[in-house]
Length: 221
Image (cartoon, rainbow, N blue to C red; front, side, top):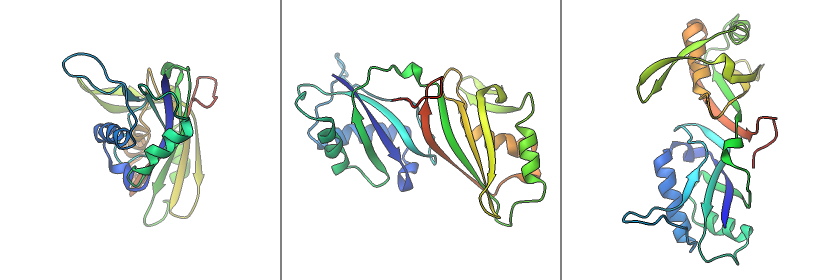
């Protein structure tokens, strides 16, 4: 029976690439004596997929992974979670295992927080400039694709954005952005600030995925 799990990727785990994360999960399932279903043919592969690949260096507490076990219907979701977490490396932790028939295509938006850090303090006028930037009708940034770099207008893909000062050196942008078809990488929001407001370029920016949502704003599970 197909199953779904919610996991977090934090701490040192944020530096694990997507491909390495897929390999990691396959090893952890095996160590937990959990029999993943495999495809048929000369090169069988485990039927396991992560909904939204996460960029290296980005923290998340809302990652979704789909999988299917073979011949282990007697295992409870709690037992599957505990077996996985027993051998999981630092920074990766399964929060919940559950049954769901909601298709991944219904995951349409992402709630995220972008923290902008200024070592010498937030420059005067910075907050007003950033708010004015995302109030524009159009903001284009370069996006790297399979066919080379292309211009992308990010404003239509930002459902909401709120700028908050959390200290004399830190600002946060709390945003809800499109997650699929089209998708906006929150790093493009940072790129927009760097391109349009270079004098307010942060010394460091970190991104955290907080929640995945459906088109009506409900939590996706």
